[in-house]
Structure formats: C-alpha cells, structure tokens
Length: 134
Image (cartoon, rainbow, N blue to C red):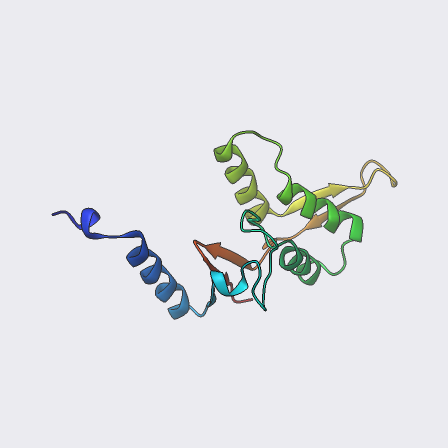
C-alpha cells in the first residue's frame, strides 16, 4: 500500500493543523463556530467567507484607507468576477500578495488607495479557522 493510499483526509487535516499550531497559529473547530451554535460566525454552512472577520481585518490592517476603498475590497473578495474557480483563486492570491488598488471616482482620476498585504490574517482549512500571527 502506498503512503498516499494510507493517508486519509482527516490525517492530513490534523497534521496540517498541528504544523500550523507549531508555527504559532491558533485554530478553532469549525462546528463550534457553525450555524446555530452559541459562537456562530455564519448563518449558513455555504457561507465560505466570514464577512465580519474579513471586514474587521481589512479595517485593522488598513486604518488610514477610506471606508469606501475598504468596502470595495470586501466586495471584490466576496463577489469574484470570473466563472472560473482557478481564475478566482489566482486573483484572490494576487490580492493577498500584492494588495488592492482602489481608484476613487469622486476625486481625480489618479487618486487611489492601496490596501496593503496581507489583506486578511485568517484562513480556513477544511472545517477549522486558523488565525495568522500579525
């Protein structure tokens, strides 16, 4: 039997979570923050992004950026513009790595705001939340 055949998804998940904890990340068990729980962070399981956490992270990491620029970044993450999952994943990765440029149409055409990386400091691994150290 090959190593891949013996490696179940739950084993991979536990090893990955242990590795992230060893690096200083904290984790939460997904069902504990799921719909209907006392500490629920989403109303439905199909909600992939925890909007209030993302919005708080964008604000915390970019306090000097205008609110409309932060709102635009939130919309851009929540509403990708491609039907391709691969294209959306690449675009999201670019936002995380490069930041997000927002041009304000109410100002001059050259006026813009840059939301600096990292755009967020949490990620979700299967059914666990992982907070990235800041």
